Length: 161
Ligand code: INI
Image (cartoon, rainbow, N blue to C red):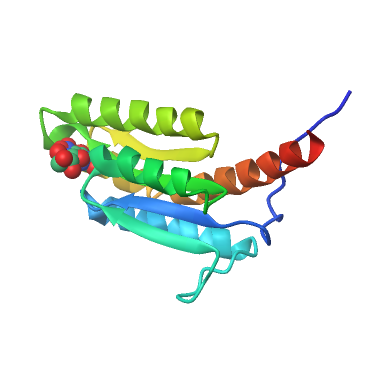
């Protein structure tokens, strides 16, 4: 029997792409900051000149899948993180946006075998979104941890097989 799991400090081999939605950027900028803080504190180079990290901005969460797909197919990244905030109060097409974003991101991950972390907050109000983006905790930090774990896990699986 083998127990295989990812580690969080196994960062030297990693190149990570973070795709961020500008819509509700009051929230998504905070998620990005939490995400970068976590990556940096686990040893990833997050400087401006970093070869380990690219941050790509898209208009809204609806556009996250197409850009994630392009990046995944480039085979230049071991892990991708998508960050967005879909807030019910803002618009009647809330359901369409979150449904397309979630299905699209799942499909990219499955079709390319590149892990794509689903970092899209879905809340009823801006207050709830802000609470998850730094006022209480910052889920950007958690999404980064999950990216590190998946990057390390995929490497372990590649080595094993
Ligand atoms: N995009 C979001 O990221 N969050 C939202 O809450 C949102 N709402 O509610 O409309 C949203 N809409 C924009 C959408 O993602 C696209 O950018 C737009 O429809 C153009 O394709």
